[in-house]
Image 1 (cartoon, one colour):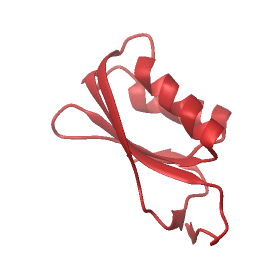
Image 2 (spheres, rainbow, N blue to C red; image 1 turned 45 degrees about the horizontal axis):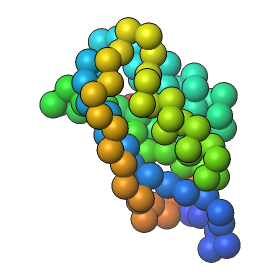
Image 3 (tube, rainbow, N blue to C red; image 1 turned 90 degrees about the horizontal axis):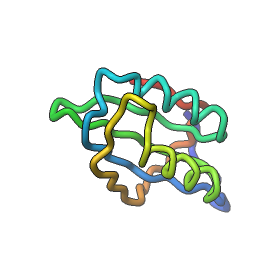
Image 4 (cartoon, one colour; image 1 turned 180 degrees about the vertical axis):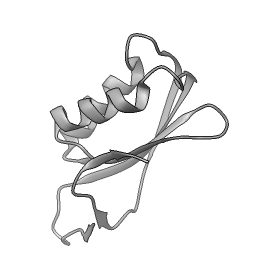
Length: 98
């Protein structure tokens, strides 16, 4: 991870997905989609049954990934997706499951 340049056009958001999103391949599918969209960051399970992700990329990349998270993989049942801007100053080199 590197520090973002001061003149960057990169958005960073933190996303929380609730519903039937654990045990259905959600994170692995999200990693594949993030690679296709060019999104960097991470995704993880939370103890409350939700999934949390940090998405980093240009506006279009982040928007495409956010749209995908609203549906998730076929076995998932997404109830709600919330997100907020992050003041993250780190630049991620890849998207990974943590």
